[in-house]
Image (cartoon, rainbow, N blue to C red):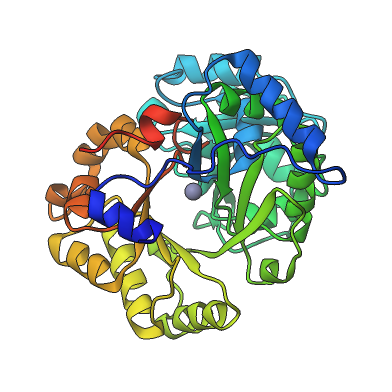
Amino acid sequence: MDDRGRARASGRLAGRSTAGLPPARGPGDRAPGIARWRATAAAAAVIRCAGVHDHHLHLFAAAAALASADCGPPAVRDAAGLRRALRSAPRDAAGWVRGVGYHDAVSGALDRDALDRLRDDAPVRVQQRSGQLWLLNSPALAALGLDAGADAPGVERDGAGRATGRLFRADAWLRARLGPAPPPDFAPLGRRLAALGVTAVTDATATNGAAEVAVLAAAQARGELPPRIVVMGTLALGDVAPPAGLEIGPLKLALAEAALPPLDELVRQVGEAHARGRSVAMHCATRVELLFALAAFEAAGVRRGDRLEHVHVAPPDAVVRIAELGLTVCVQPALVAARRADWEREAEPCDRPWLAPIAALRAAGVALLASSDAPFGPLCGADTLAPPAA
Ligand SMILES: [Zn+2]
């Protein structure tokens, strides 16, 4: 029986790595990095059992988040706390202040003017906790040229054409505009993963390509990241020959309800990945995103390893369809536990009965993988990533 079958038969989360810490390898491979990782983990004295696999996180963003101001609950709950967090945050090498984890419950829907009142002596960018929205103050907008002719999809403007400071899903543009930055320091993140007993991770960032693989491989060789890393990413990533210790994972397709692609285009992308021997992992957090993803897989067909990421809402007929199609679902139990009350308050009434459907998916025999989605959810270890059978 394969992993999927085992997970179905037992009704358990298939989160535990069966391999655990890999055996030391021969000379010429990445043994020094692995040895250092073992030493880090042993020093933390918490490697339990065989180690666990976090099946969906974002290594660059998680490493950067550890060096950023925490702007959301539970660390920050009101405007005064947000002001303290931003004013005490150090500037990065480029002189910017970076904040993460913001939620409107802290101080409403922030725009440039509101941010200017909190800190205006440096360019400030604050990421909303969904990861899909950046909030920028006026010095940041000026530095990016958004008040002087530059523009990009996702840059919100008011009726007079003035940038509001709200940038939706503009990460790639922002990165290109900010210019090359040194990679984040992965060591603090690696120490946290080691302390949690995480020995394998899957980076689920849709934009990952050859350059990101090279940076992750170098950090892994220095012993800063776990000995097993699976990298999801672009279609072109499938042409990269991964170094030892890294594996190329599924094509990652990120659906956003507010900007869904034409269904035909999505079906074409799934078909192209399958034709190249790659499975597909589709981000679908909302009900609409899930139904769209299911329509795409129904049209394109399902290949072993095809996955749905998140599935925070799933009505019963969608759960049945996921099981029938044989799709794996990668869920985030710790994030669900942290956000469930907010979701229940904010959800559309028609979604409310079907939120966080992990138990329903398990009951329907859907193969589940467990993950943190860090930094958008809390990093977690064996208790969350490989819980005992329900
Ligand atoms: Zn994610």
